[in-house]
Image (tube, rainbow, N blue to C red):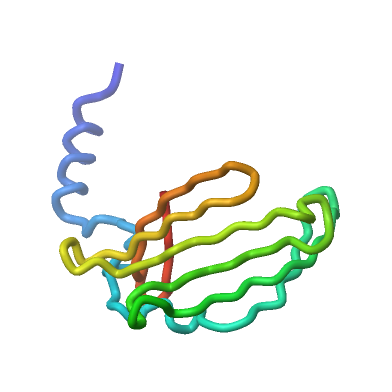
Length: 125
């Protein structure tokens, strides 16, 4: 059984000491230019845990008067060679967030929301 003296000391310390809290970077929506760094042609290389290396290409362009980012992905080598996919990403003013939809020739459909975490862009499900 716990001694009441230690409970009282614990409560007093909790009231006196500042909380030890790990703070997360602030999440913000960013704006319609948050993902502009991504625009262009990308030569991709990866390796999975089993050392299966691969190579691919990613092309990102702004479409629809510069309001939407279109991504075209293709895995050229490795265990996922032949995978082709695309995404559309847009900053929506009605909720002030980024949204992305991904589809591919494997029948996958994924949707994400994102913005900035501190100064780092992110998408999450």
